[in-house]
Amino acid sequence: MSTSIKKLRLGPLPRQEVTKLTFACPASLKVRLDQYAALHAQTYGEAVDAATLIPHMLETFMAGDRGFRKGSTGKTAPPKPG
Image 1 (tube, one colour):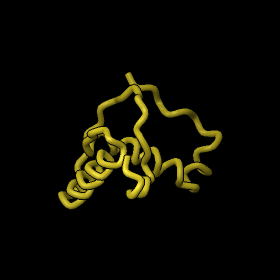
Image 2 (image 1 turned 90 degrees about the vertical axis):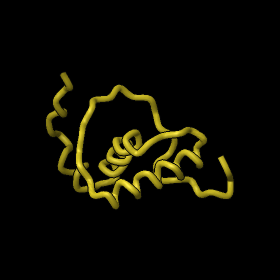
Image 3 (image 1 turned 45 degrees about the horizontal axis):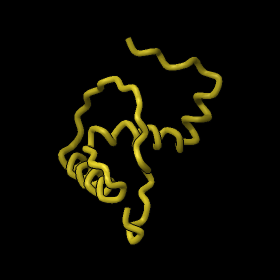
Image 4 (image 1 turned 180 degrees about the horizontal axis):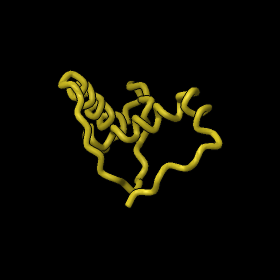
């Protein structure tokens, strides 16, 4: 990791159990996601693609969303996959 590059908000990726989810996005967003993936790979020395980053980006976004955190306290747990 180069010290001249600032750390990204999304740090190194943890290993997790996954569930497949497909979604559509504008072509311009896909370009930006690919750019972010390339910068993430350069920063942390591990090649990743946009599809790998998206779940981590969403988790980071939701964890930082005060309204979501406030509205989800005491609610039921999300359904289990399967």
